[in-house]
Amino acid sequence: MRRIYFDYNATAPLRATARDAVVRALDVGNPSSVHSEGRAARAVVEGARATVARALGAPADQVIFVSGATEAAAAALRPGAGERLLIGGGEHVCVQSGHSFPAGAVSTVGLDRQGRLNLDALRVRLAESSGARAMLALQAANNETGSVQPVAEAAEIVHATGGVLVCDAVQAFARIPCTFAATGADVLFLSSHKLGGPKGAGALAYLRRDLMPEKAFIRGGGQERSFRGGTENVAAIAGFAAALAEAEAQREAEMARLGRLRDFLQAGVLEIAPEAAILGAEAARVANTLAFALPGLAAETLVAAFDVEGVALSSGSACSSGKVTPSHVLAAMGAAPELARSALRVSLGWDSTQEEGVRFLEIFAKVHERMRRRLRT
Image 1 (cartoon, one colour):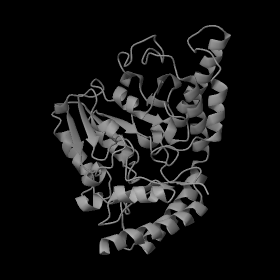
Image 2 (cartoon, one colour):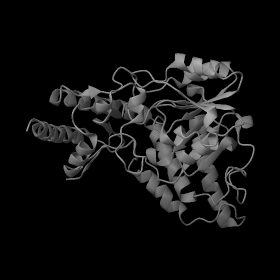
Image 3 (cartoon, one colour):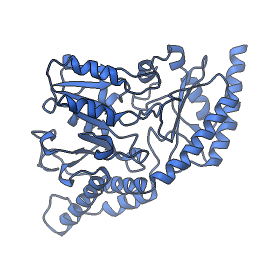
């Protein structure tokens, strides 16, 4: 019996369409070469760029391929488009550092208790900017709780002050509408492996040309319209575009299916463990994510116990060098430390099934009873 993989927010298994696209692209030439093999590689890259541009509603020549979301954040979060950086309290660690902004120019905007950006706190932060143009970095959906962020409303507030909004759409794309028109964002970025594409590819897209970097953020041979030097990862880019196209085409039907599975799991968790706290329960959440806490039980022990039983899930973000640490997202939501230390995340995706959901709840009941029994003895 295969293992249950419920950690799609960390990475999604590779889709067959993406694997096929990768294999086809492995033998093509260098896209900067002018011979036939090079032109074939260039056609793959530019076809993929057009696919990403259509999906986001951006001009194709304002889409830059990068290695993933961390590089995209590093390239986007630079003084120029903004003099001061505001960061939502629940942002991914790749955004939290502020990258090229000096520490004194970075401020955090708080969350409400459901994990959504506090728009009143955003207005206060903007008022504190003293005329400095602000850049707001905000996820479309949180990677730990699944809470959908008020990106369009935040964009309207930021734009009214002359600022710009950079949107991390990594966890939201193909789960909710994430075009420039839907979000109101000025800059969007994506990561291939969250969609079922290969690791090592992503995209950074700009709505307006004047917001693009003034100089290369990686110097080299002038690739990616001179913004990012280095030979393009043609195979990964091809797989990225294939995964993105399939995920977006299936979005509505797939999110309805996964929403039913998520709700089934949530009801089962609460029946087995009435003490469980569903995190972000009153917020709109992306349909694939269920975060809950089991007071008194340690998340790292629970993750290990589920792993032994054949279930892969997580205690939050996978991007902290494999460490299980209290969540900064839950802290920003005002969760008590003991609750944060017991939080688990179940995240679903294209290969998740109802049968796996039934098996998971059977395993959950066994793990929960065993852990509670240990506490009683």
